[in-house]
Amino acid sequence: MKKKTLRFYATILTVLISIAMIGSGFLGYFFGGGIPPVDSNSNSNQTANAAADYQARKVRIEAMVQQAKVDPGNVPLQTSLGNEYYDAGGAAEVVAPTETAGNYKHAVEAYQNVLKTNKDPNVMVDMATAAFKSGDNDLAEKSFKEALALKPDLYNGLANYGVFLANVKQDLPGAIIQWEKAQNIALNSTDKDRMKSLISQAQSELKTNPAAKGTSNQNPNPALKNTTGK
View (cartoon, rainbow, N blue to C red):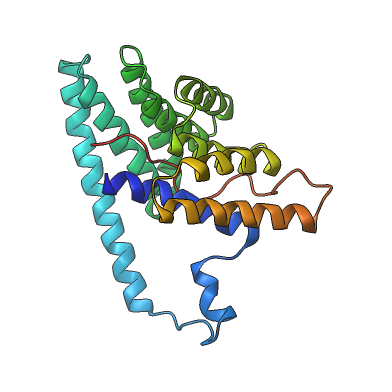
């Protein structure tokens, strides 16, 4: 469950930044203390560690791919493979950008294999987010709608569909509707506050530019993923 939450909230942070350019990286500047100095050695170590983790993930993925060839009908395996490819896509954005889209496309393929026999709306949302990150916006929108038709009160589906509407469709009013629904069914104060922040910033953007439907950023960087468990 923890890993699912981290995936999802990475996306929420993206939208907070893409809509209003206000995020954790700006707090020190606006509230005192200035911008903290950059530790080049720390950044270098983090990059090296991220690259090593990405290569290790690729090894795990290859082992799972070979296992899936032997047992193609193994739904848990296909689900895990989709999750691994999705996380690899997020990691590749930092350490291997040219491999990003390919990882997300493979995630879509794995989730499609799951959905052949298991019409799980959670998996549909995962596939929709992977499709979004791979550039297949038609599949993303179709999958979001199918998931929410099956389960209208799916918090993560509502929240992520709002992200999609804001960033791809440039439809902030539509995104606000989804986030308000998610806020109403959120099970804890943290989730409610995250939706409240998104709604507030989207409303501020609309007040600043009433003629605009939404944001101009159609390609946010962090991953959009959350619902499929391990």
